[in-house]
Image (cartoon, rainbow, N blue to C red; front, side, top):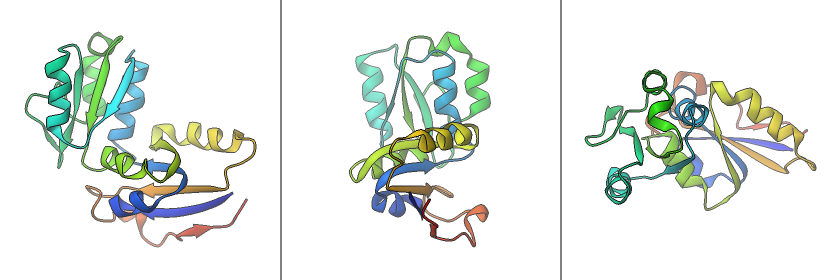
Length: 169
């Protein structure tokens, strides 16, 4: 398995093989939490208007997200794991959640056209993602890790001085 390291929205668009889009703190901590709290489905959109359109067709849809860290008017909640936990399962049980975020969700949407598969990566998902990848038989030929940084546009401190490729396993 060759592991390639990419970053930001442009890196997500270049990513290939099995792609792990990494939004470590918020977006991809929110997504597994909504499923833990009973959500039936998550849908990712790149524009707030798309999410609001879902809601206009089905008032039971839950809208979660942000634009540049700001709550979107008309959304049910932002992009905060603590806010999700505060809402609890009453909001999510059996529902479809439409999620829009500036970095993580946009990264996923940018990667889907070239990726064999896209996986959500975060601190809370790290062990599960690594177990999943290592359990594949055969192992994937290429895994591309894409760190989304700040707003998908600038590298964050943890992204500095890390090699762009790692040894093949």
